Length: 105
Image 1 (spheres, one colour):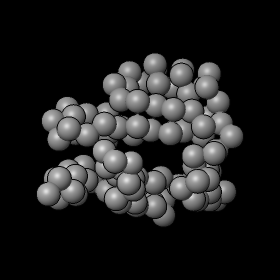
Image 2 (cartoon, rainbow, N blue to C red):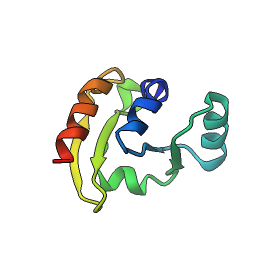
Image 3 (cartoon, rainbow, N blue to C red):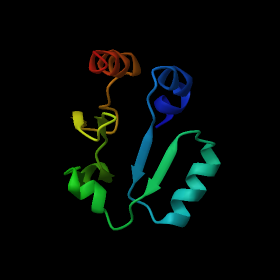
Image 4 (tube, one colour):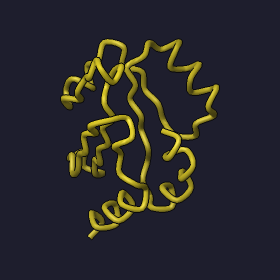
């Protein structure tokens, strides 16, 4: 999430909203959000309804949910999904911005 936080202004200039859905309870999520001063949206999903809907994987050896990044267009259509195989397996912001720009055409 730090990559999103550090590049928030670039992402915002591409007319894109960031929404992070986390597996924590609301209180833990709120505390984490405030402690990190994130500017984008965050939604707790303690019962994992959304995370299960998009089949985000759990790896107990990696201590929890694997990262997943998705792009949903303005009509609500899922246009891209990347399931990480480790906590470091996330697309670079430059890659995501190229993809965002390609979806505008």
